[in-house]
Amino acid sequence: MTAHVEAAVVEAAVTALVEDTFAALSRIGSVMTSMWDRCPAPRSADLAGLRTAVFVELESHRELFNGAGVVVAEDALADQPRYLEWWRNGADPGESPTPLQLDLNPRSEYFYDYAAMAWFTVPRDRCVRAVHGPYLDFTGVDITVCTFAVPALSTGGTFIGIAGADVPVTAIDAALMPVLRTAPPLALVNTEGRVIVSNHADHLPGARLRDAGDGRRRSVPDTPWALVQLDS
Image (cartoon, rainbow, N blue to C red; front, side, top):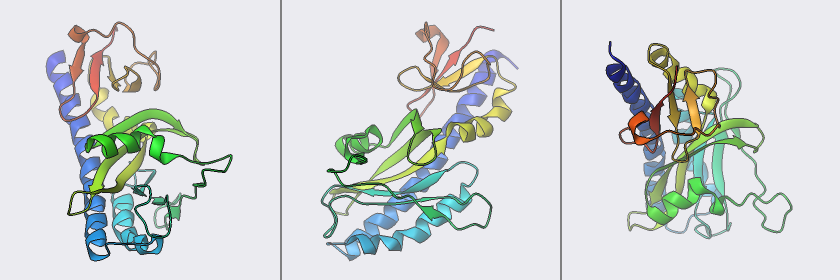
């Protein structure tokens, strides 16, 4: 098998992972849209109706998702200026998901200002799906993740929030390693040239690649990522 064909196989695996993740989030977002249509002025308690959809995706993506849920547009709810319905898988199969608790009070020292974060602002401002990371998630887990997000809109087209998932880099690595093992030295990088995963011990997640010119870079279709050929 040539290096070109091997890289194409890796590309296909990356695209499948990304598309599967976004498809799961679109299903959650669709439930959020339907709920908004039934209740045009929802309150935070109404979002409990989204949990079944979130739990289904968490369970079916147990090996990939650390957490998933929805994050609501500011002032979109009748009773809370900021709110999220975000859950994390339990440590063991069969264990119930646990809610993520964050400080959303802007006067607090520990205010979690999600409305300023790229995984929220890109879907909100550009109405496109987005992947942010890899970055170290300090919200209680301290692991390196990529956050995937899709915009959620009311039927009338108003932005009401995002449906998202945190995907640990270790989970991406585990999902892609079967094809990476048989490929030439490659690194999957984000738009900033930072490594997400690679099959070369000298290129760790989060490191920035240098000299990754167009001749060594292959954009991965339908993703914001690229594969970069590494020196052996």
